Image (cartoon, rainbow, N blue to C red):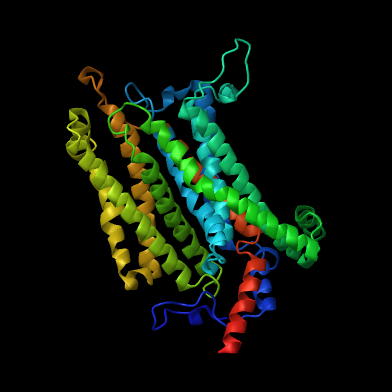
Length: 461
């Protein structure tokens, strides 16, 4: 299908999930040929080369960190948490949209998730991989991470289980495990398709090994569907629990700006907000460069924009309630914390995040903006930047002026802070480039099912 004839918004204001006219063969050929038939394009090589260069920068930064220690970062008393924790929370949040699209929308039988769930799940796994490294690197001695595990060591000193820092270990590891299983189980039928279509012997062996003997029998399909529903049921509460536990890292402390009961729902909404922004950021270039406009339609982008708008409104409500509670409570420390955010040394960061997270996304109320691919891409990028700034304000601005003025100080990130952060972006993109090159980025099985339903509906009209 010519990309120029991809479905537009209809008079009723809604584009179809999938335009009638596709056949099972064309859908299978189009998706599998990206992996098996096209080879490695020049654009892919350039993008992968840039990402790999950033990954090498990350390796250099981490190596130097392990040799010299965390003193190469800008963390100083009283700002003991800097870019490491900011980036940890940001990356964990980005992964939430993939779990929501894959698990919750699957249980709710939302068909529009079909074209975007596979690379959203991959995005979740790669984002969690980036996030999980930061707490270990922040320890200064990451080889001692096992002290957080529940085992009696030589001194019979157990971890403090009342600390949410220990809860993070269980929450993030469970989240990563379930997300990885859900992603892999969903790909098994597609891996079998690649196994059967591959002409290279090495590809046949690798995809055949990963397909785990899939033959498409009734027993296989029954177990596949059962496993998918069970993993979706496990992943659904993780959408709420993981970032709630991350918010406890802050809310159980007595630091002004952290000690707030609004943090758990506020963090979860912010995670979904930034996650959908990242999905849109990835989906738009993919559908353009691989000519998938007929599979990733305008309805997918429109629905994701609506979810992003809804969660953005919740985040804006959280900002307003945080300010209201600070003044209504009569607590002078909380009141000063808010005023310091608005007028202090980091005021420009605060007002920039308000602009990125609240002001600019309001354009999504307009259907014309939601149906404009370039504008939607820009808004998604702006939200990604704004959500990173929000985590910076929560971590750094809350710490740099605490209860005792004599202990106040400013945080200035060093080049090694930036190198580590940019390097994780390189790691994320490197893994993503490898994914779209060697694995089906759209679920062939689910798209075939959707094609059958769409064509059946068109025949019945």
